[in-house]
Image 1 (cartoon, one colour):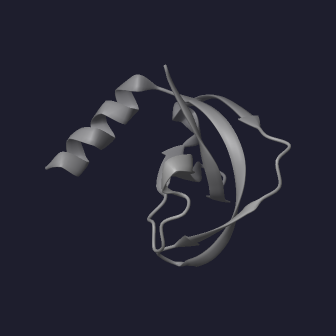
Image 2 (cartoon, one colour):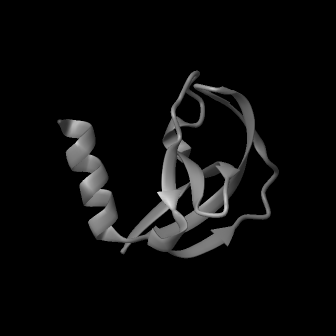
Length: 82
């Protein structure tokens, strides 16, 4: 189980768009879409939202601490390295 701290900048019924806290200041960042099935725990922070410039425009990100399935993250890393 991997802990990830960052901003959720979009959601659907099936997934959450996530930007790592370290990448939040970069312009044109592309969010990682995490399937809700692979998110084991999600804790929303009380902090104010932050404006994040994604590849599809400006979004307001909400700070979250997510616990994500390790197997899913390994698949994502393998695909991004290829």
